[in-house]
Image (cartoon, rainbow, N blue to C red; front, side, top):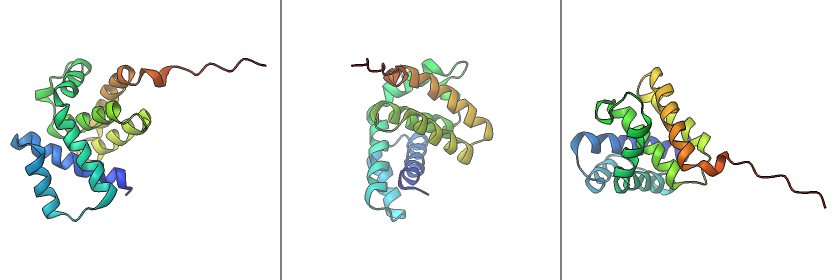
Length: 147
């Protein structure tokens, strides 16, 4: 498993716990790192994602609410909701990661930790949000005019 994928799994675990316990990232990450030996870039990316989702949670949740047709955020499965939060965070704050990679990673997390149907749901919601927060990726670069 790659470093970023491992970091996403760890971030999902922390976000899930935070959602259940209503605790912040400091105590949650402290417990996570106490039980697991994770170092370097994997740990840094996981922590950044967890703290970033926490910091930007109102904006992230607002985007999810607007683009999850017929689903209330509070009624979503905890796992799906936190995969969406992680994906939206990456779409907003990591433009260097292609949107298709962010969405694919989120879909894979959904298939692995939730249900097969979660993948399609996660894909649909994140794709709608991508159209707003990554609009520039939709624009084609005009061809250069001949000299």
